[in-house]
Amino acid sequence: MLEQQIKKGYKQTELGIIPEDWKVGNILDDSTLKARIGWQGLTTAEYRTHGKFYLVTGTDFKNGKINWDTCVFVDKERFDQDKHIQLKIGDVLITKDGTIGKIAYVDSLPFPATLNTGVFVIRSKNNNYLSLFLYYILTSSYFKNFLTKLVAGSTINHIYQKDFVTFSFVIPKITEQEKITRSLFDIDELIKQLDHLIVKKKNIQQGVMTELLTGKTRLKGFSEEWENCSINSLCKLFTKQTGFDYTAHIKPKLVTRYKKGVIPFIQNKDFQSKKTNFKTDYYIPENVAKKFPRILLDEKCLLISISGSVGKVGIFSNLQMAFVGGAVAVAKFINKRQLEWVMYYLLSNVGQNKLFRNVKAGSHKNLILADLREIKIPLPSEKEQFAIVSILSDLDSEMEELRKNRDKYIKLKEGMMQKLLTGEIRLK
Image (cartoon, rainbow, N blue to C red):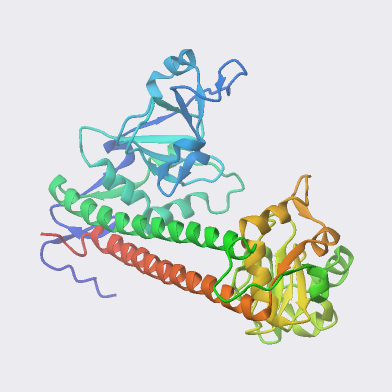
């Protein structure tokens, strides 16, 4: 076997070929690793709904940062007992229980904070590396591969400290770390700005929807009275899959890979607004699906999630034939030109309130079909519907363009991390 050619200025290590002036570091040797030991949970007396001392858990991690708005509080006495684990700016956090491998970087501390047992905190030992550099290492595909191998075959969602400390990573000189982190931080800021624009545009759309879909504000040239119709009156069919059919006939025939003769099995996570995912978790033989024509998705129709993640609404575009899952209601309209109007109305704050008014509490949230059928939809003339839907569609298109740009920069960042964090590309 031919040995891999090593170009000048690089060396072979256990992590692959890296620059000669870089070293291989290790969590155990180059970091101070802390974790909560013996946490017994908060007593009623120690729990606070507000205060000055945060308790951070893994559920408070969001987009690599701590979401301080979701944190609970502890009293000062409990906080003072936990001095060995009080957070500092620059700490890197990783969840070790539950949803393992979530990463957060502490870039601010609005109030003093401590951790629960489900989180490791990592700090550089002797300033061997920049904290933000380690954060990017832990969000890279290299660490994700390490984590996957670590828990492969395990039925327990837990990272043991003895295993985690075996993680090794490259450490450039501090000056080069600064350049790498600055480049990645700058693209992170760009992605964050695009996320803010998407949220802002969505809020604008919600405001426009509330005004236009309720008739509170009318477009110029329209003054006719609106009708008030139940969803059911607009449909030739409004139904769902039955539990018996699923258990007896559908479930045994489901497959997890696409092959000739099968069609997508659409669950509530596979649709939203005008988007439908056809690369689904499950597929069903077409000849089986056709035995259930009422829930066969073979025409443009409306989908509403009715169990679990309730309240999602989307239009099935009929780009290809599919089949509806058990947590989804399907509404086949008499006049398909009304589909977009009803979809936007149900996605508006007013429509969502009407949907959630009918949610039945239990171990899972559920919507009852009979309740959905009676939801009233304000209905202007087709001409006014079209004018309003066109405005909302334009806003959708603008948001979609922003999402495409954001996703493009996310992919660019992934490529940059692959090359910068391995030394394949050097920054001067």
